[in-house]
Image (cartoon, rainbow, N blue to C red):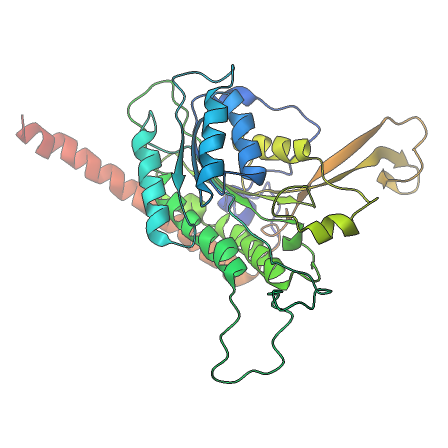
Length: 382
């Protein structure tokens, strides 16, 4: 195993351009949202719609894809009527079933064509569904993966796996298209930022098992696997700026249409996630170009006290007794999965080193090619 420090030039952390842990107690600059073109899948309701409402207020151009046309059109009308939204802002909706490759290709093409810079700044893979029914539901309409029929033979249809198709295949399609479109440079503009960002919406079910939602849990674990791998290679998609940032968001239970009513009943009296915290965490990831390769878990707020013990050194007390003389705070957002590339197997280190060398060589060959074209071919066309 190789475990180079962050200060080591050969560190894998440096190779993949992984940023330090996110300090969610610090403020961030939302002015970077002005003029960004953001594509959101699953944006007609739930978290996607909440993000759209917040980012529209901050001057972002929004392209929303969803299968619920009524909610999508209503959301666009609502956003355009907001006093803080400028008439120059592009805010539009397009029907998109994320399990359809052609739908997603069309959505991305429309987004690029409508963008004032003819480019995308951020893509949010937000489309997701949960399984219908619950383990205590014995009705024939329950379609849980956990409840196979009493008999299975060659004529028995396979489980529908619709959740896996939307939550994983759809996200893979979105990510693939984002990797293609995000590096494309905008039309010449001296004031336009060159920050490119892919935000994957996972879930607490991507970190822990969620009994009764097996297919949903499997899909969200897979999204976190996608994030953990992709954040180590997304920077290789282009040899020149802008590079692609990849981050993930893992909300705990928050009251949106995807949350089953049975789950709300089980959570009665227990903590739920504040929607405002989820919006704030997502906005931090989109707005702060310095956050690269991080995942934020958003859960119920708990009491946190940072202190120092003479024997133990620095300590953090969560929902415990306050440390004498220290100031406490309440926190609901936490940085998770931050150490994947601080300690890796030799294969991973060598593979990333090879990618790094290939990227460097491609950069030099591209420079030489452009130089030759400028000196000889371009001169000959005059």
